[in-house]
Length: 211
Image (tube, rainbow, N blue to C red; front, side, top):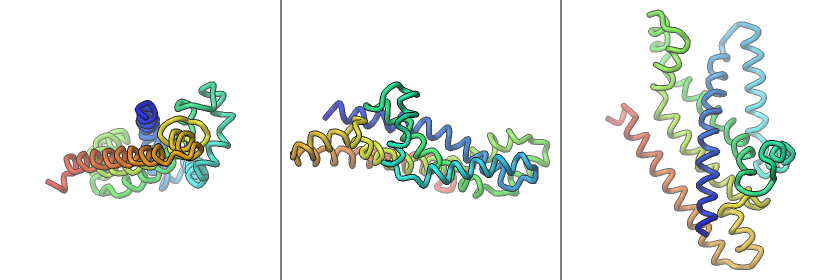
């Protein structure tokens, strides 16, 4: 049980770090390209939107199976916690990207225009306006995404990814041991509560509107 708990935490933490980076990049591309008039920007927006919508729409358990050849080539195996990371990232990054885009849209356009009128570059807008102003919302979105990833790790356990989901399925359900299933479920709930609590505390500390 201890090993399975660690595997679930490890899979969630590592995949969430990658998802956060990819999600912000994809969300930024969607935000920056949405109103651009250039042909290149329209292509970028269409391609990114298409990929985000496609991978966000595929059920996770099906996505795992579809990505088995890719996972085998990337990490060298299709079982164990390491093998679950590609599927976790590809399933959650588009979801988080849409949240990032929506958060960027909530930033006051007047602030962005003010920075540009003072000679600020696009990088200044990104690092001095978009990211700082939307940080509380980004953290809140990351919290929701992390909780989704925890549930994904449990589903991934059905095909041998390890973690609490795998333990509940193999040693609990298939062995007709309801105690193992119940304990694994309770530990997953505790992890979710911890993630939600930490996320809420960070948002409350950072959000200027709560001061």
